[in-house]
Amino acid sequence: MNPDFAPIVENAIAAIRVSSVKQGTDGDSPEAQKEQIERFAQVHNITIKKFFIFLESASKEEQPMQEAIDYCKSPKNDIQLFIIKSIDRFTRGGSYSYDFLKMQLEKYGVKLIDIYGIISSQKINTLEHLGVAFDWSVYSPTKKAEILEAERAKDEMRDIMSRMIGAEIRYARMGYWVRKAPFGYVNEKIETPNGKRCILRPHPQESEWIIKMFELRCRGTLNDHEIIDEINKLGYVSRVELRRNPKDRTQILNQKGGRKLYLKCFWRYIQNPIYAGINPEKWNKDGPVKTKFEGLVPVDMFNRANKGKVIISEEDGVIKIYKRQPPDYLVKKGVHNPDYPYKRYVMCPYCEKPLYGSASRGRWGKYFPAYHCSKQGHHFRVPKKKFEDTIYNFVKNINISQKYIDELVKTVGDEWERRQKETNRDQSTFDEKIQTLRTQAKLSVDKIKYLTSEIAIKYIEQDIVKIEGEIGELLADKEKTKEAQPTDMRIVMTYIKYFLEHLENLLLADSNSITRAQYFGVLFDIAPTFDEINGGTPDFAQCIKLNEVFVRSQGQLAAELGFEPRITTSKEWCPTIRRLGKILFANLGFYSSVVLIITKF
Image (cartoon, helix red, strand yellow):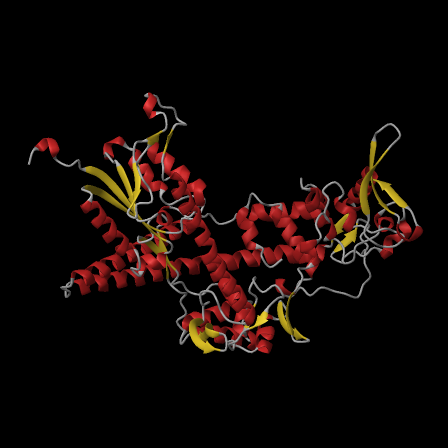
């Protein structure tokens, strides 16, 4: 054959796309598209350098074909043709997306062709007879047909999705199931008056775990953590799902699932109405519907297991799901104002209600902050500085009775000794765990001698490496425990006695105003009024609701007798002395080990 008349061989890439991962993994259309494109290339003497396979929808804003187009842009790849089966395999984004993608190819001299012949590379110049050409005079005679085909592909996608999603919404409202089966169930298609529809059936193993969760919750003898332990002992593991590469859906990156039950997952199961046969599907515009299949547990068991947090009820044939409102302290914000921290710890002397705090603006624009109350027709207002000075003077005249100081010091010493014994026991526990792990490692090494399988040897070696890692962590923790110096109790006792003798430094020296107010509130069993703490009104001295732990500077108890806190052990101390201990040791923060010693306060 004369080489001057040899056919020109052009390099091309081929792009294959299917709309879903299921089509690609089930082998529906990718192989068929590939065979058609290969046959087309062979007939037209085209060399296909690379195939691109996309298993995703082309109706999204980010078009999957962009990756293949970027490959064509590189001159080193030497691509002249871009082959597709048809325009609807290229894009379903309509004429705009089609034009945008095709123009990128034309810019780099790459021709887009389809095996059906709708796309043509022919160009016509309307001024060719004059020997000139303009951008507007050169056009493709098939451009209109291409645009119409691109719009038809978009319309077809809309029609398909409308039929499918519309049917799913209708059947979901009728009580059938239209999604992936939740944990504990499997999907099953049955014959119904509405055709072959999908319902949920109990999973042979997972359903037993779900039912057991509800039974143990209703029984009330175990807390949630204990229930989780029981379910895990029964062999619970979550479903394993594969994670695929979003750019290449045939490639499996890793998998998720296969985990033991944990607290948040347990709560999701307990609060899901589908386990009671109620579908809270968002497509149900009239609210939850009763499904065409039985739930794993009855509705009353579901309600008892949720303990009022989620309640399913049926009112006049309509299913309602009620959720408990959050507590007020989570809803009402801004109660604690750092500018007026004492407004909830000192009450109004007239109505004995919490005070307000705000700053009024004077004639010359100056602001005057004050605590005030104007409820029920009375008027009370005290400037902020005077108010806080009153609190300081009051605290300065408060002492802790010697009886409780002695008990506090004694308890600190006893607790310190107990913690020292625990530290010694922890050292012994570390040694026992390390010795057990070393024994396991030695046994694993002995097993290797008798094995011939490379796979078995590989897994045993991995176990040995894991054991060695655990031993290393235990040794590091043991060294940290050794390095931690025991608390110098003489210094601790010195600070304790100082703070107890200078209570104003303990309660009012914190830089956080909210914390100072909270510390002040510890002094009282019942929040006092301003007149009760005002040093200028001694007649109120016997009415102050001080806890009897504290005494006035004159040595008198500032509260009525009759309640004597038990002091035989630290667990039996009154709440006030426990809270005082927390304040005391929070202020000894630079001796961090002290905070660990006093935990029973």
